[in-house]
Image 1: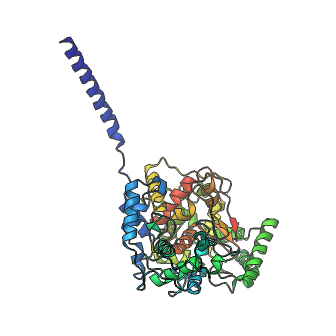
Image 2: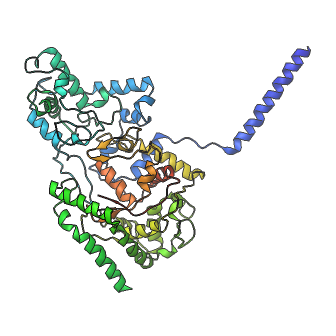
Image 3: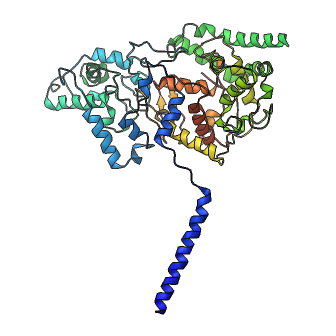
Amino acid sequence: MKKVALTAMTLLFLSGMAQSQQKKAQPQKKEAPVTQEEVIKVLTSGLSTDPRFVWKVQQDEAQRICSQYTSREAMPAQAVQKVIQLSQSGIRYPQWGIFWGDWREGKKIVDNPRGGRFASYGFSDSPTDRGGNCYACHLIEKGAPGGTMGPNLYQYGKKWNITKENMNSPEALERVRAVYNIIYNAWSAFPCSSMPRFGHNGAFSPEDVMNIVTFLLHPDSPVNK
Amino acid sequence: MKKKTLLVLFTAGAVAGGLLSTKALAQVEGELTPEQEMKLVQEYNRFLAEGINPGEVWYEVGKEAIKKYNLDKCDLGLGPGVFKGAMAQLPRYFADAGKVMDLETRVGWCLQKHAGMTQDQVLKFVRQCWGKTGNCVSEYDGIIMYLTMESNGQKINVNLKDPKVKRMYDVGRQVYYARIGPWDFNCATCHAGKQEVRIRATRLWSADRPGEAGNAVSIFPKYLVRWGLPMTMHYRYAECIRQMRWPEFMPHSDLAVALSTYLYGTANGTEIKAPGIGR
């Protein structure tokens, strides 16, 4: 009996404490956390509403997921899986499927720094410019200055042991497909990578992507000299 | 008085004009020939070696413009016309506008209130030298240069204890990480991360490496040798956003204020040293 009374008293005391804590917490009135909608509203408030470009600020689901994490390491496995799944399912191939393209055409896109930039005050690219500005982030051909944000791609084909003899083997063509996937949609292999999803976003056609892959992997390409 | 303005404009013009030969052919960013690039680097190195910063010329331009546009009535948070140290405590909340504002947004507000400009006129005033590559002296750039230089030597001290400022800081931080647009970029693509990386030859500063955000923002407006004019923070945002392939940036927007609050808030404690100088 005594024990019960003691327990009851303890409980009463504890609940009283909890109540007083609640009261204390109330006047502070924690502000609601910043929502993604609020962020997008502020963001779009500062961008031109030129009807030609409003489509650019339609955030897709993968972008929404990636926006929530400061790095891939900070992403839960579920989010990583979701981005990979979204990205892989959207990959489209040229009508020929997987084949060797023209490395000279690929080189043109790789070397060209212009494409996609517009400002009414000037410094704009032309609508038909479709460079990838690849050297901004990658070292590619020997001696050509490039950035260090992405991996060094010099001798990328050699790295995968692609030679004139084996280049049409199933293994080599599987490598072509893997690199195609990365350039078409980098997030299919590296979720939320810094690299733009060039094919997915329509900056390059499937044929463009094929030519770039050929530039990187073909034994005749200067990349592999 | 008029003579002085003319003299100042002449000096600025001469300084910018000297570089015109380098720039006239370079109408578009990133299209310098190797010779032009070399000339530019030489010019830049000469300025560094001799301790010259042509950006300082804009201080006088701004001093005149502030009188001309009635900005001595403008309250940057320390009282009307009190400019010494005002930049150091911006962005802040302004009760009269009911908003958090950074320096440039506040100046735009004052231009509407005290100089009778419409919002469109302000935008035109702000962007008159955007995209120009020589001989362009804007009174707006002068005003921003003057107001910032009045806080030189002071430490950036954004009041993040004010819940309204703190919220703008939080929004700004999330904007910084928002992946959006046809090339999937966010601010953090280039300016975050512990590891040091380069875009072509340019070393990028990172918000994740201590002190670097401070070093980056405390020198704005920054005189750019290749354009012969000082680049204000909002022009910098516009250029980043152009490179990110987003639709064109609107100066004095909430987006600008959110970014400024995050960047200057992160830069708290850094001494203001305007103008900086860059290639």
